[in-house]
Length: 307
Image 1 (tube, helix red, strand yellow):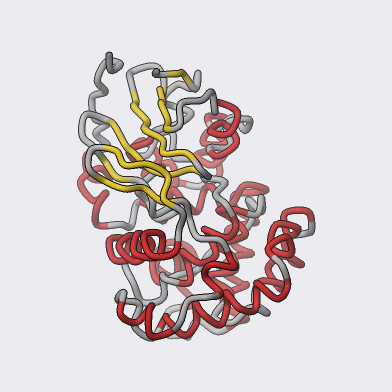
Image 2: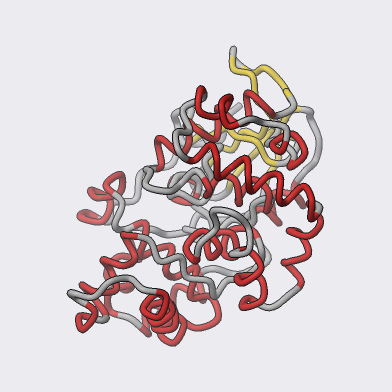
């Protein structure tokens, strides 16, 4: 049974939001349709010209869950207008990315997904996250011959060994994941969720006390799961954007801790309270997968609703 999220394309476009490196659990099925896992549900999304429809296994009305997942209580169009007035670069790339929202993912999933991101690309991170779920996550359902799993609990990850993760293709990241999982298991999973209730600065600092979590990963978790829309993850793409388009005086300098905060503070001053959301659009414009989209600002034609 298909249900409606009651959201127009200018407020949510799945073709950019689901595949720009915020979450690694969505797979395109063709014809403006994607399938992934949100919590304990296998969810299929279909974008039409006027709405996003969904169905899930097990069948249930999870509209409120998905509206929370997509932050749909926050109007996006006014933010785009604000950012376009504030910044010429944003105004140039924004037409290529209508409806690009920041997700509100599960903090455990977000943390361990981004621990896989060191010196990595989206396709490889996706494979690693899928391997992690298949090995340690609870099976949810088999759909079209594919078994979907819930993201593993902290306790399940804490039982993993470096050897198992190395065999799954995690390389040097295996040790970091195991250490972080065991440390978080000692603190309790609720420790991570409570960071949604504290300031951005406090949450960021707390995350960096976990093994393997530096400033960039901490900001990814703050932005994509802990309700900190001002967080600016400064990775190689954002570092390039900053030096090329905004802070040329940083050319020739290293990305030290002081410079990291200088870049983030610049974006926060330029774009305001939701600077991390604006940064996400600028980040997407740097990805090779969206290069033609940026060149032509061509919004793909949307199909009618599935029957």
